[in-house]
Amino acid sequence: MEDVHTTLRDPALLRDWLQDARQRTLELISDLDDQQLMGPRLEIVNPLLWEIGHVAWFQEKWVLRHLYKRRPIRSDADALYDSIAIPHDVRWDLPLPSRRDTLAYMAAVQEEILSLLSGTEDLPEQLAYFVLYGIYHEDMHTEAFTYGRQTLQYPTPPITRPQASHPAGEGTPSHSDEVTIEGGRFFLGATGREPFVFDNEKWAHPVEIKPFRIDRYAVTQGQFLEFVEAGGYHNPDFWTEEGWGWRRQAEAEHPVYWKKEANGRWLRRHFDRWIPLEAEHPVIHVNWYEASAYCRWAGRRLPSEAEWELAACLQPGTDPASSSEAKALYPWGNQPPAAGQLNTDWLWLNTIPVTALARGDSRTGLRQLLGNVWEWTDSVFGPYPGFTPDPYKEYSEPWFYTRRVLRGGSWATRSRMLRNSLRNYFTPERRDVFAGFRTCALDQ
Image (tube, rainbow, N blue to C red; front, side, top):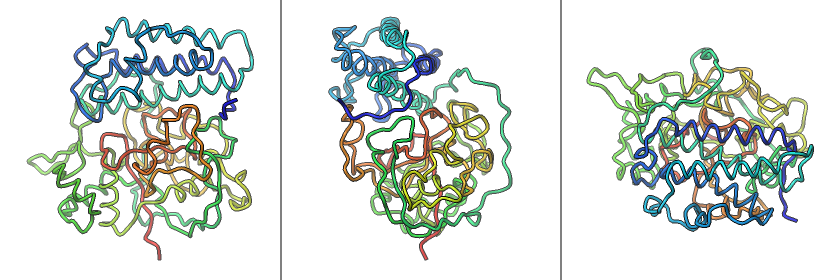
């Protein structure tokens, strides 16, 4: 029996999520023509026509073929959609099915999985786990479809979402508005109480953390603009050696989607439109090098992922050193996300002010730890003690020690996937993802 973990076994819930994930995928391509579905050959995007087929193939591979030993729906599916076997730059050259045939394949896979979820009230853990993995995998790709549309300057996606008034901020953020975390012994990682756990979260283990001070809010576009206008992109003292090499090679002068007009006004490209900088929104589309350079300029530093998780998990009246059970699953406690707590699920199709949504504050008083933008940490992505890969062995292990950890989630992340222990990871030069950061005071 494979060592997998999920506490979610309600077939009705999984059916709803499976169909909801697919609806989001289809919405994100519904307005694109066949040429846009292929797109240009870039290192940071996939052909969307390939990627939507890959999403269905992944679900078929793990649920229908791995668990139930069924024959492939398409005999050529492995040759077309196996992301491990097919190099990235080859994906534009594959004999991909037409849009219609790809959608038919996706529908056939989903129909078979939905049939497995019918007629029972409590799913076997193995089935629930692999169905959930397929849902979360599709959720990750729909976020990637979204920032891919941003990269390719496609229009704002036509997403069906609930009507919600845009939340207002509360005051002007400053690095002096920080929270002191006492530190000490802390259990980093998943405890087993989470609804679902990826292999890189396993399992909670004790770490020692020194006291530290961390920003209540993520760094804003207005704050980052000060760094840009102070010449931060031209002073190597603020950059790591590797980061300065990246900046020179990329000829970066400012965040990737910013530009300055002749009248001195700064704009940011949001999909296919140029809009004024939103001074109190988080800076977004900055990479790890840019985040760390800002920190040096500001006399700050990035938090480690352990510091970030401790700040998110602390609960009043509990001793984090006593056991992993003292950890909260979410910044506000152990209840799943609710409306008004976080900016996720494409709710506003953009970031919001960093001081908004006080209902989602952590027990330590930090705001928007989940949602709005992913947050770079100073930590290199690596295994926790005793790591063993889950059945999808390529999810984490091949990327250890080559990427930096991000925490939190963005406005295009599904809230159903988020929790305090979730780890994301990208190479440090990636500017296309929905990433920002918050800072810590330098150690005294």
